[in-house]
Image 1 (cartoon, rainbow over the protein chains, first blue to last red):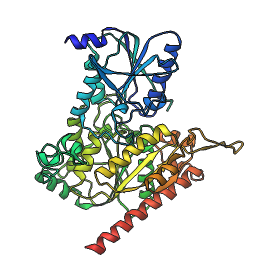
Image 2 (cartoon, chains in turn purple, orange):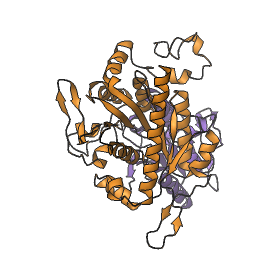
Image 3 (cartoon, each protein chain N blue to C red):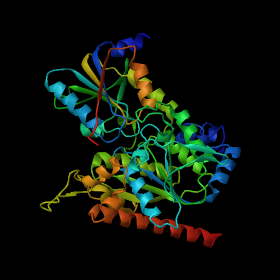
Image 4 (cartoon, chains in turn blue, cyan):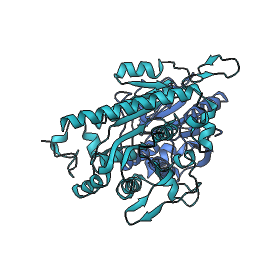
Length: 161
Length: 312
């Protein structure tokens, strides 16, 4: 649809950060990667699709932020020293940070699709997508929703054991 | 009037507006139908105590703890222990219990668990895969189906303790296990965390999940809580408790802190090799911590049982 093309049309590269295993440092790496790319002069966005355990807002000190809508969809929260990194996370939609998002797959899938198509990213060199552990609904839906666009590839994170 | 959590109208009826549980009910099938519930009740009738091991956060040591809890309880040869791994995407239990490559056998009475000891049986999707590297890329409904099968079709026999290891998050697997086990009875949940705020923020959500679904919380275990160098004996906080760690969180949320377990590289090694860390490193401070925690869990379950018997 025209809306889908518009919101991701200005994004040059999309990078997924995956693992399978939890607690190995996916969110940490996603954050550091975004900051490093930003320091190198790139326009960067982060999409946090970990609906049950969204860690990115706290890592970038914006856990108390709220999101707003504009004509083309949701406006991401701008973070980092120069407010140059665009971030979208379900963390921003929770009324209280301790609220559990206790959703089954179909509801998660619907939100992920919205996150991919309805966020007004603008022009970005890199969109980094942080994922939860596992190989389930979030991963299938994210890849399916992103497939029509420029998927650069995946970085896989692990620990030695 | 609440239509009932098991009803097709659960979460959708006019009366549901504003109910704290509306989202929970509307998110999907709210539980097993009466016939299924009866089936599950029959199968699980021979299970005395059920403990869920949860977190919210990944990689904090749920499976490690579940495995050691199972070993610890099974050290008493008069007790029959069952370990059920419902982490369908990342089943760690087979490797940690030294059971990689084992297969599940069927008999007239159902699926047989894989036995580590005579009194310690294990079930995991890991045993159903043809290769340990096979990815199980399933959406929620299919995962729920397998979890139901594990509860309905596995012939656990007489069990004193059923320990259920879960994946990280608060999603299909967690909703399903609570709903399917509502046909029987869950003593409570043990929630595992590490000291840093990034973990605690997910664990608070898990505590809220437990409260939402009325699952009693036995207590919280803080893993990776400090490291003592074997050479110089200096203690370092590898994952500093920048917001007070599990201790502060437990105080704030009025839940019990069952114990803190220090980091010991031998723990990871034992897990990788499928051996019981408690048996391989009996002198480690981590072993002492684990044993104390296991005892507290046992006491909680036994006390609970006594109270129930009194009521009956």
